[in-house]
Image (cartoon, rainbow, N blue to C red; front, side, top):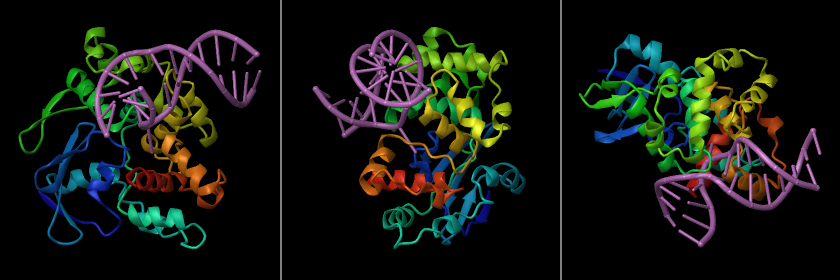
Length: 272
DNA sequence: AGGCAGGCTTTTA
DNA sequence: TAAAAGCCTGCC
């Protein structure tokens, strides 16, 4: 168990409920259990105002969790760039949702998660992903001795039986998931190669994946490839752009952090 | 070329 | 019953 002092914007609940990740699990004492690749972390807020307790070593924090939590980015600085007079709505959203960060999630997990997310609400998304992990992931135990499952690798999903995949309640998305997994296994889809493309080629490349449209590709770009300027437009954000900005949102002013501001607005508008 | 209608699974409110 | 962090196909 280690204690870490975090002075930048950081709110466990806001991150967990932000809709960017689907496997943060609330645990005892207002903590959360977080799974990332082969690693699992339990984290609690300490009494001290900006300290947290984590059940990992200093090395694991430095190598895995600090990057995952994007601790090298200064969110307070990004958040306070917004001027209350020139954009009162976004200013209010930033204040209200202060504490959200954009996690550096595993690209493969993000891609599959956001394909599953289409046309569904968050509880349903979480249920499908958890079932997928139980059926194709690897069984492990966290620091408290409780079971968790890793997110299944492409090979594991490609090898699932139709029955097993059916049990994940993916609906019409099951064929997207299966084909995407198969494409990675047989080498037709290389996420690392896509990530290495010039910025303007990544979105079209992601959209060529079966089952991936502009929205899911943008989520993958922002949450899976950490392009903080990517701006996913879903039904909520569409309403925001219409009602608050008359479809004339000043993207240029907010580059290269459009995606971060999108997260504040999404959470703010959805919670209202 | 780009836009639109209809269909799609299941869960949630 | 409608809506939910949409996409695909077919048609124009």
